[in-house]
Structures are given as C-alpha cells and as structure tokens.
Length: 203
Image (cartoon, rainbow, N blue to C red; front, side, top):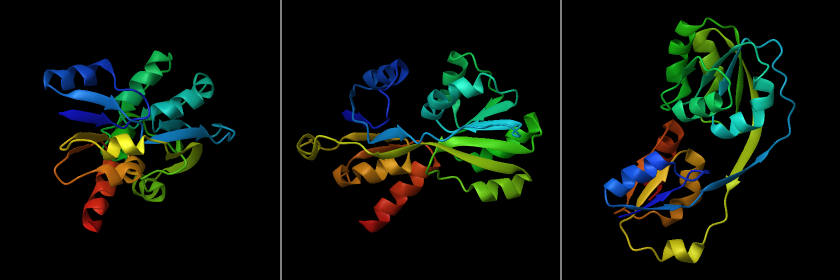
C-alpha cells in the first residue's frame, strides 16, 4: 500500500524501515509549511520551558542553550532533537495532549512559570493547563504554519486505498479533500484526532 507521510520533515529511517517491512511504499507530502514570527524570546522569569515541536527547537535553540530552567517537550522526537543540540531535557510527553502530561512533569520538577514555545496555533488549552496545575504559562508563538502547496492532480489520481500519516489537526484539514472512506488514516497527537473526528462528522 502507498503511505503518504504528511510531516513537515521527511520520514526518518525508523519509519521507512517499518513501512517497508509491511510492504508499503512511502511518499513524503508535507501538509504544512511554516515561517518564523520573529518574536523576541525572553525567558527571564521563567523556570521551565515547554517545546512543542522540532521546529520550535530549531528556532529557539540559541536561547535555550543559555536557559537555566528545566525543559519539557511534547514528545520523544522533540526531546531527541534538543539532545542532539546538546540541550538537556527533563521529560518528554506522550504526544496525546500536553494537558495529560503536565501533572507528571511537575512531579519531576515543581515549577511556577512555564515558557510555552510552539506554533502560534496550539490545540492545548493553556489557560486550563495553568489553572489545573497551579502554574503560570507564557506563550511564545515562535512560528506560524499554513497549508503547503501540493500536486493536486497527482493526489486526486491516486489509486485507493492509501495510508495517511497525520501529525496535527491543521495537517488533516489541509489535505482532507484527498482522503477517501476506504483509506487507512493514522493520527499522531490529540489535535490530529480531534480534527479527523470533525472531518468524519462533516461527511
């Protein structure tokens, strides 16, 4: 089966090997593109930082290298990216929603103010997370995403079923017009799951 991986970056060797062992061919079709917002990343007064994606790490890495607070991430891939840059990570989330992860984060380190470094749009309810965990959260929207240009003719001429790997709600919405009922859709993360449910309901 053809599997379309929609992440901004190409699938890693582990993903390619897993799909190949299942007899699948992988196409990399980024659903989104991103651009830095250019905001000033001032982490003074924050004793923790939460990184929402590898893109956030890439844009914030120079500031994070001098950050003395504790660092949490949305998932293991983001944590690995930080470690590759020589930046320590206290804990990685489950990628099933940061709201579920923060109680565990705070068992590792009791913090008061978290710098939330992510895309401008985030599926997490920052006010609710702050309230439930008795912390302060300052959002640093370090980049913005938008639908990426795709080869419309090529995607509309696919032989179905195909597999889709989605990693965010915005990615689902960007490519929903190409998904057919017989396709196999794999959703990574709470925002992707929520968006796909809304797509199914609208059919």
